[in-house]
Image 1 (cartoon, rainbow, N blue to C red):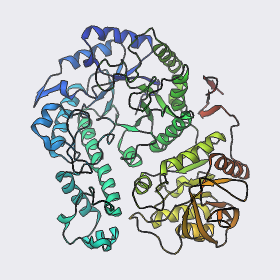
Image 2: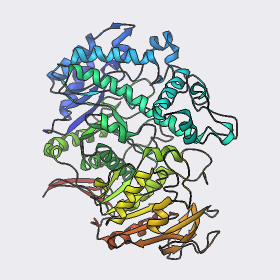
Image 3: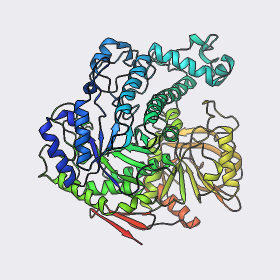
Length: 633
């Protein structure tokens, strides 16, 4: 468990990039800025194991001692995120193979295959050396395994991965007959009669795509085998240190999808995450809030920490805009308001060389006499002035949004009714509408239990494409027992094997509970269409028939003219809605506003200020005036 006598503040520290005479100045500047934690050694494998089995710890011993003497705690990494050049030269088979069958080269980072026995053994050996040496060092307060798993090469299609995938399938399926039924392999003559005939689902001939069941199982396998890497290193650390918590940093960003963080969160002692703004988005503070709330959902009551964000511009977007004066404090405090145990950065001192030399840092190229360092120091003081925030959780919301990585994986596949569908965009649009209406939301996974759902007045299901029978029953029972539910279009179309449910799209949840029989999809030809209640819709329409539901809005024009766009059904103590289209932003906002009024949801009425309660503290962030306040009630 993280220490709750402080909010953590600091960032990734890479002293090996700098001569030793800089180290003392670093610590002085850290103290000046109220830094109390640095993440150390994340990309240091090549400087620790300089050749096979030749470990050199002198420099790391020295900086660890200096940091401790300076009152700076350490989040110590296992350094396994980037194997050194000598290892891939001696064992090129550890390098990952991409979807096209091309082996990727050394020279970036994270250039390893999760199924490689060589990588697994060498990473475990390095972790053992580090844990054994530093487990009792007084500077260490937490452990940092690897870095951003799945960020750069989440899927490897090499022979080792193929063999591991087949072993994974043999554990998942009782027989080949069960696998063939699940994947529907009688289509296109894909039936397997020997386990070894199953390939990793690489690129297939033009105009075709790998079997959908194989693709989604490969994504499940990839998340799980990568998680095994983390668990191996975690367990080695715990042999030597049973006190300090172990984590690995997730990536709570809109476009990241490779790892199932709800599953991963169960295996870490506390959840940590990285978040970087999409700087082209003038409302990126809403995305930031969404990802902070999502991370809080992963944690599910556990402590969590913003492990990385940027002090200003990043280096990997098409146009790397600097943050505006005051924006940094707003960004960091939005995470803290939503439960983070502090605010950490990549990185402490801006690099002079390498791929990230133009990525901002706490100490920029210009040094301490810069706006960035001054504003970072102001944030450090604000956090140090409010250590008691760390003892309180963010208040629970009345609304839950269902979010699930397997839905993401399913919606990334080809041959859907339209290529314009985007699971993350739809989820973001629903969240953005709530945010602008001042309605707080929590995130829950699609396999959420009934007891958790029962705590919410309203549950939203944007494009939850796959549900097992048991999962469908949980949401059915929620709605039938007093819970208010909004089901989005293209939801509950398939079971978890991606086999389509028959008898009306949306399954029993839409047909029987909400009372709408959906028989055909009508992707819209028009950019937008009007609905009968004045709303505007885009992307999607359906041919349907009422089966007990009441029409809220129908399409006023286009191919689906006269068809239901939004319906609802009174279930006695609750109401269930079905949104059979993608509403424009203003219409989505009005739709949720009407529901909020009907249900009496708590609403904070402010155009530019977000207000979040964390125990007795109210944190107000005005994005127009660039101000932050923390008030105890």
